[in-house]
Length: 126
Image (cartoon, rainbow, N blue to C red):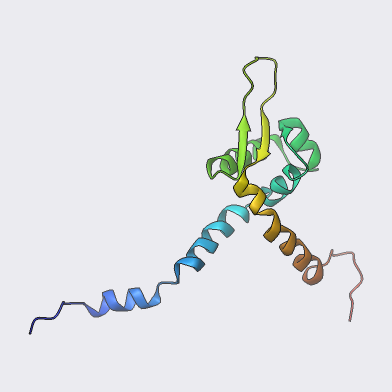
């Protein structure tokens, strides 16, 4: 009787591979865990905005980082970028349906962070 040959190494690597759901979560954390990404999504939850308006909604973010993060978020379809045909009009950024869907877990994460990671100047609670 012939049986498929499976090396011990192949079998072991399959057993150690995390489930696809955890791999998907890890990919999301890599992108959304980057500095400013979640704050940009939160800023766009207030509505579409041009570059300057997004920057004004996020105190402390630099132009270079904002441009880079907007580009990354648009590439993975969390943010849409609309360039009007008129040369004097400004490019508008907005949340895509995928970006809007992230608002629910983002709100839950904010509540969790407020409970478990209070501001450093907040008094400790027992």
